[in-house]
Image 1 (cartoon, helix red, strand yellow):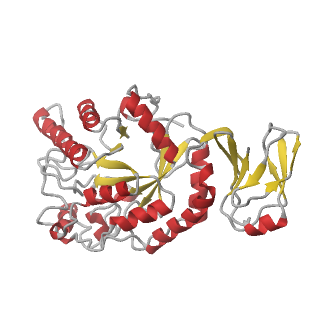
Image 2 (cartoon, rainbow, N blue to C red; image 1 turned 90 degrees about the vertical axis):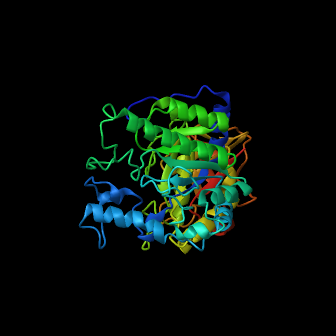
Image 3 (cartoon, helix red, strand yellow; image 1 turned 60 degrees about the vertical axis):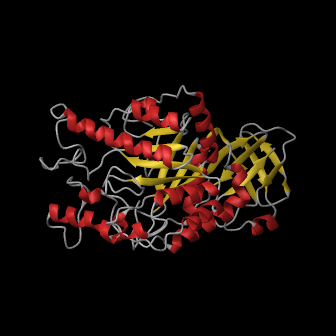
Length: 436
């Protein structure tokens, strides 16, 4: 798979960063949350402000005909944002029970609205213009981080480098043509420096005022000079992982394929960021992926050396869709039985083969079977594509304490599964054979 437009992965030299990446890789499963004023309209986050003609930038609603009228109405959503049902402890507990181990939150998306108490703009959740500012929990980013930290999550701050609200990024002197900065930064270096300073200062606020953080997840705008920002971040947060998605490889500590899963094993750290439904942000008519598919994605990704960052978009009232809680609860039931095949494991050759996924940890090997949608039960004789096995190996199925009889045949292992075990484990999204 191509890495960052053809660039190669550059492993960090900082030993603290290396250690943090190894810890992060062992966690495997995280929660992503996209939240902002855009949830009021239930639209694609920020992108309707971008004057590119793309499927995800289309404007809808009563203001759609006029770009500037639409932008004004969008930015005026600040005066309506009042998520009174906001309860991050509920989110953190639901995520923990699902087996999630880390969390990344959108502190600021491309629209520039800050979900934290910055002193560098009034376009923020704690501004007097925002109704929720009177709430004692108005500094949403702090409340989210504190709640998930109490549940022992590794924490990540998503931060958009583009800021479409800033006059130093989208200068109103010129028309806006696309997602990028709309003036020549070589002709107006002072304005560009102001924007870089603004970005630096806001990141510094996050690095110094929100407790221990583990991941700094940058999105967009490759033109910015990042060395001073990363140096500052690692001074305040030693060992913090930096994911500068569209920048130089030295500041991309892991790869982040979006809404897609690589076809093959990748030998460096990576994470698929994937929506639980169809959209990153809240959508009233959201259609959620089946639990079976979500669990199979996790197993597939882990066998290819990756992590899964699964996104949920909170609504304007501060709550998730009930289906999001239901999916997490169902994932948690599977994880409680089969989690040992996920956490702290490493991919094992052949990684993925047909419906099989291979991982290992310590002296155990885990061979996961990902059934088709119409497969409700294991077969009485399962054929595992493995060319070698210790003659004294013991094979069992996670969720059952029975040892299974097996024989070796050419490059396969034939495993007998008793009828009572088949019945007991019927309907699973993934079955895991443990070999020790």
